Length: 522
Image (tube, rainbow, N blue to C red; front, side, top):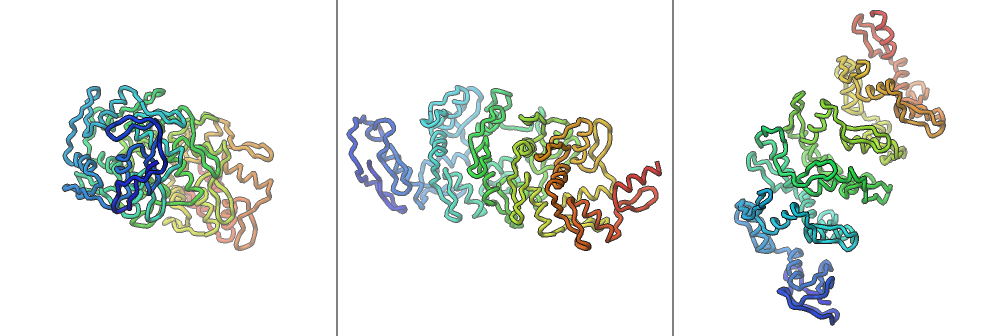
């Protein structure tokens, strides 16, 4: 074997012979052709192997700090002149290669050749480990890293490792705050090209044919004919039909169809939140949450619902919202066949069947199905209630609790039962009410097998078996198994009567008492 040696500042072309090779060779333009699979040239910096010395020399430029080739338009630097020439085509928009099938144009011949394989279905590159086939050698090389676990690119700031240099570059923008992708219309800058592409849709003229997506959707699902712009999105979608989940969490053994979803899930166990808001320093587990959060500061809501004129920060949020009007529920539970409007709702629902509770309180070790439930629970320990009702002065731990509470004062009941017309101020109460008509009781006690229509009823019932009464009155010491019962009890000491009759203004301590009283007027 041969190893090219050299420092990171200046790479040497000297070959050090490691071991002899007696196999027969043929001459090629790169040098002698070696038997298949033999790679005698090793990089001294990252130990990667190559079949030809020229390929090793080209690879070692990755490790060089010097980038002598500068773009005269945007001042970006490159290690190779060929990389600069490829980059410059972004500025000239020159695309001389046109596909005869779909008329799409390309700036590089290699990209054109790779695109043609979409139409021909040709996949000449096969993985020797799992026999998966690919249309390009780069995709195969990228895929092989899944088997080897190779992550040669390390961030110099936080030491996080990546399988691809492009992923490292994208990650580094978190630390540098660099936003090199600028909108040509409004000059707003973004750290990623995908974010710029999403933003540019704001400036696109509204299509007359009702199609919101201006880009070619060349990748079509063979099962349901749904089409996608990117092959990766198609592969991700196909997992819905195959139910294949090859990526498994080493901590809780939960499986995922997409590697990225596994990586995001693992942050539940590690507590890692690598994406930080530059304005308020709030941290997030993935970039999408940070991107959505940042729009709270800019108040940018470019997507409007045509039915109710509600504005949204993301097109995906708008599409999900529109299902409220259409009633569409495309995601079905394979266990109980319950349908959901979003894949995230189905994902959360499946925890009922699995019994999974991945969110654990660090104070009392109580586990929860949802992160939001854990956040709500933690307030029991901290007692923090920053949201105050302007109507009655009542304080709440979450803004959502305050928002729902205010409907008591306004009388707003936006959720109506389709069976009997009864209206509710919370969607959860409507769902629970629906089960009166359907008779559904999905929550079963593991001790006595008694079934309940809601998880809260089951939770209260379980305390009969355990004898647990965690909610104690601070004034008289009496303990209760429900927080709501403690709140009702507190009103004996405070004299608070928050429920007022709209006819005679008589006030009551409990909503049920008000409800009974209102019958005297009818």
